[in-house]
Image 1 (tube, helix red, strand yellow):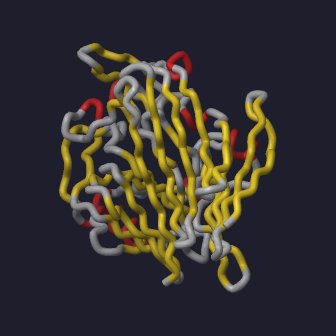
Image 2 (tube, rainbow, N blue to C red):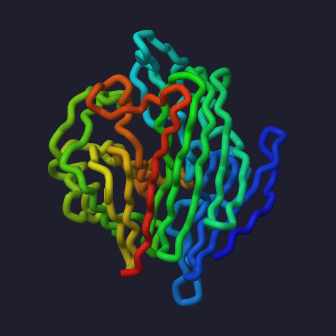
Length: 332
């Protein structure tokens, strides 16, 4: 097991670093301090590396891109309806950044910041820490957030979030990672299985209405479905051409993707998986509804602060909270 560090440039006058963690199987993950980005996840097959996630080559690429490729987003991932919520009996009004709503914590979310990195040689992990200032993102409370990436010899990647605030606030971050485990640039042959029988109903602006619907047709991934076939069913079912949907889950093993002799199992201690079909690198292909990857975001149900049965995302003053996402690669 090894961990290496390399300076890759600067963001807003701060040095940015890249870390590579490699295990005994030569499986490796690559990280950036900018946006606590999961830059790559590679496995060694017959002497050659195969990447399992969408990735870009340079720091500048990540600063410029708009799809949050591999970045950690928040402090609250997803949409907050009306960019407002009640906390301790008082209304908190945020500045909208999508229609009248707040998406991924706003324009100064954690996906725009450069973190401080530190290697833990004992656990072969990298801790990326960020002081989130209320004056930066307008949420109540200043939060110290630590995002720790680790890779074990069982080819399991763990992303652990530890946070503490100096005032009551809300917190629901996630890694906006895009997967493609196939041998091609298309995810049509990638099979997806989700341990969920309900999806959230959303309005025309993709904000949850509060209703949970039974999965059916294209949305039913309780048994593995090829994404290409599911997209065809989706179009026939309701005319839609992409998945951008929220599944209510029960924690533990949430989902599996597999293709071409590879599988990745996703685990979470929270209650939602958001999936999103995209080609974040080639916008012309996305406009033709050709998708190179599938975003899989493990989090608490979006807009939870405005729906009492969606989960608790309140971070109380001086009470530390921890979330854990896991991604286990298996050779089939």
